[in-house]
Amino acid sequence: MTYSTDAESALTAVKHRPATAGAVPAPADPTLPGGSTVFEQPRQPRRRRLAAVAAALAVGVSAVVTAIPTTGAEAAVTADTIPLTIANHSGRGEHVYVYNIGTLLSTGQQGWADANGTFHPWPGGGSPPVDAPDASIAGPADGASLTIRMPKFSGRVYFSYGRKLVFRLATGGLVQPAVQSPTDPNADILFNWTEYTLNDDGLWINSTQVDMFSAPYSVGLTRADGTTLSTGRLKPGGYQAFFAALRGLPGGWAGLIRTRADGTVLRAVAPGHGIEAGDLPRTLLDDYVNRVWARYRGQTLTVAPFAQSPEIEYYGRVTGDVMTFTNAAGQVVTTFGRPDSDSILGCYKQLDAPNDLVRGPISRTLCAGYNRGTLLSSADQPYTEAGGFYADAVTNEYARLVHAQMVDGRAYAFAFDDVGAHESLVHDGAPAQASITLDALD
Image (cartoon, rainbow, N blue to C red; front, side, top):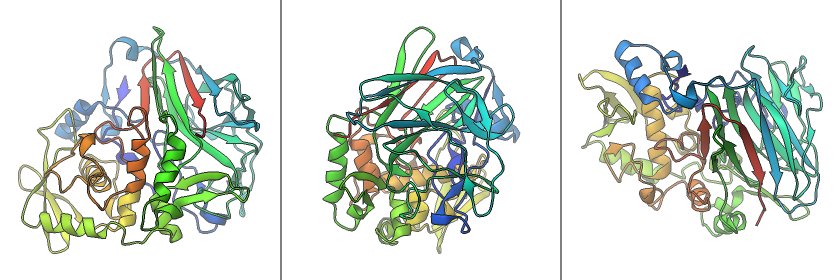
């Protein structure tokens, strides 16, 4: 059986913008150094079974627990562990360190997996946080590959170049790297991560740029019949082209780039983090929001959030400083205040997306429309034609540039980039193997 969560990505509206199917970091704890975040329970893997969501709407059942049958390969039960091959095509000579960190789905325990796929729970933490056990796996040298086992986790596979990452344990769980903080102990390390969920219904694995654009990689899987799926690969020269384009933008976008003292470009943090750090103005998207607000004072915004059930629609109009949505019966279902730029870039606060069947799906649709600049292009949302994204002069330039450098155009450049299936994710119900390829920084 497969469990639908496609409200569709309504489970990701968390302050620090977790990307996708991995463990969810909680909002920053002010008692932790550098605004670090602590892992909570994982969200469910994303699915594209919107018919189940529609059925749940009809009977008032939460989509998260709505089961629907599967057929064919997806009906197979995934093995307890599957191989994960990490290939190093980076062209870099430093040692690589790999970490498989997350939540064991059978018990809900948080911990890490070793190279054999054996789970190790984290010991208790402290206040202030204490050092976590060394969970690193020696990664492959440039030109080589390494195969490890991945268990039924919802979590992340981190990799770093040259130095091991620093993980700590607070009383609430694992403290993960805070890429936005210059005082984080990992701030000068070149690293990145992928996110995945492996359970009885298969594997979901994706690349992510929700928090930062950094050391490039692609993800993939091999099906039982030997065919493969992959995504997340940059175009030749795409890594440097992204940074060059970001540097060339006016308005503070170049301030997102973080560089080590030796001149190594480490990452560009996501624009929400840039607003927090003062690199981008808090009014970044205000002009666009004001125009959207003016448009829908006199026109109805129609949101059909379930692609496989387009008959389910909600209707938004602005009155005063509130956008009110009604259903087909004219009943008010939810309201939104005028969102600020940080709410839009992070898909939270005024655009919070709870795991429900109404506000969450509407909110994720609005978030995608604001980030992609499509709410003035069409009064029917979601607008899913990529050729019309980021065309407005006021837009999420970071997301635009990330997508522009991807071979297949797919990315997770903001939390709800899966609206319209534009995310860099692959899935199979009975995978034989998974893969992560560390690509060149060219």
